[in-house]
Length: 276
Image 1 (cartoon, rainbow, N blue to C red):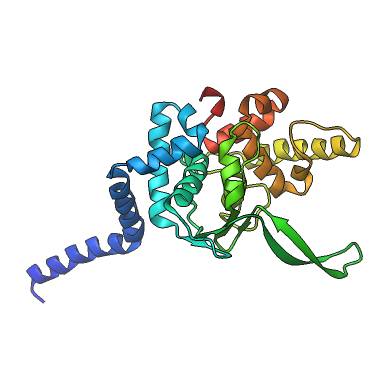
Image 2 (image 1 turned 90 degrees about the vertical axis):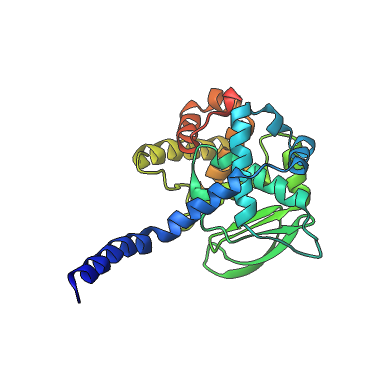
């Protein structure tokens, strides 16, 4: 091999190795940039104005950010209709735009583990095997509005997607709830302790949310009610998902009643809905 050929081979190797190591992420970033450079369709804007009152409340810069996130989600996540439901553009846009609220602060890498969104016309029935206190297995049947699987699926009732979007102040939103579970499941089973990023403080997160969870269970045991509903006391994962719904839909009330919890969620999501 001549010296010129050797230099050419070395130059190729120096370029090829980084391309092999960083290629997928680089191409993904380029593809997303191209998607976000496209104009947000007028029909999609009309869907958000008609179906998602929370969108109109967002500052212009936040609206722009949400639209760009929505575009990427729609480009990357397949939507599948179940029980005879034919998925429409309106369904896809409304689900993606609500899920995008969770990513406004740069969290979650566009739900990187999510492979598909399954939509049912209404509430759907699932059969489960659950052990009782003695360890005996029993078949149970549940009627659900939504569910998130660690394997990369979110399942939603379209009726509940619509009702959740229509009232942005009731603290209940099935899309926010199930996609919060997806964030929680990003690096393992949902446990109420999502990855906080390089600058997060897992010890403080566990202390704050653990204390809030314990206090909720104590209040319920005493027959007391409060802002956080009883379902949040099911386990730590449900506590995180329910709290996320409240954070985006009743942020002022959550900050007043549970300031430490609100502060942790604001740090995690990188936004503060009180300013919208």
